Amino acid sequence: QVQLVESGGGSVQAGGSLRLSCAASGYTYCSYDMSWYRQAPGKEREFVSAIFIDSTTRYADSVKGRFTISQDNAKNTLYLQMNSLKPEDTAMYYCKTDPYGACDNAWGQGTQVTVSS
Image 1 (tube, rainbow, N blue to C red):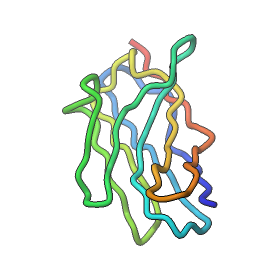
Image 2 (cartoon, rainbow, N blue to C red):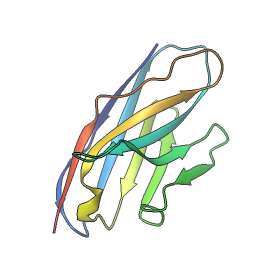
Image 3 (tube, one colour):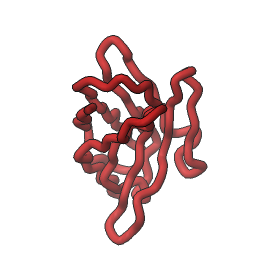
Image 4 (cartoon, rainbow, N blue to C red):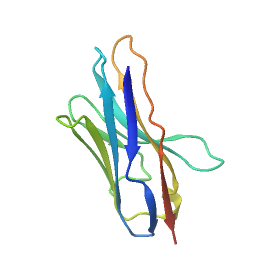
């Protein structure tokens, strides 16, 4: 089972930047894509970005052009570089595995991002 731990959240002013990290540990025999989700208070969890096994990426329209997802396979770490942050980006950010085959997905515990105007 894979365990995920996010870090890098914090409080920034609008226009600022943050880089989130998601460290993966544990073993799984399944290959998997990785993704970021976020959840603002009183709202449903929403997709932010994904990176696939072939290294292609996908973004929600709301973050396209501002956020960049990447991974360092040697470090088993997923990243989310967030630039030009807006108050509406304020949320708890979670990373998630999207496995192929008969494996359960995994979620991290989340890291809080707060953007003030």
